Length: 144
Image (cartoon, rainbow, N blue to C red; front, side, top):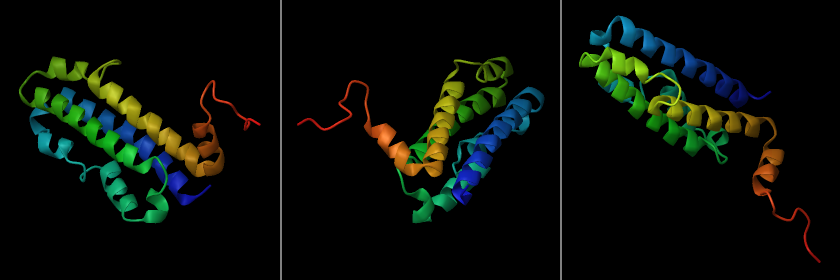
């Protein structure tokens, strides 16, 4: 297993932990939440890691890095909306933002799905490229 593979796994676990921490903050001390810090891409563990990976062409090559970076940004925008609701005293609505089907949860799911694709790509990049190139209904062998 290569180092990038391990890092991606760590970031997936860390993402879940970060969401739990935000949920606890919303429920227990919404007045202490900094909406700006939640929104910023460079303050949390994944954002810092993505910035580091982006500086290393060996780790940021392939089809997934840019998608993950954009999905992470989108997720933080949704998380900041929840933080803003909590800060303005609408804790009940803010907590609903963590429920299945909410905008933040959909954004989180999309981010984790792309992280999983990236993880699989790091395990077997050639087979990941082949499977991405094969579309349902497309011929698998060249025609004569």
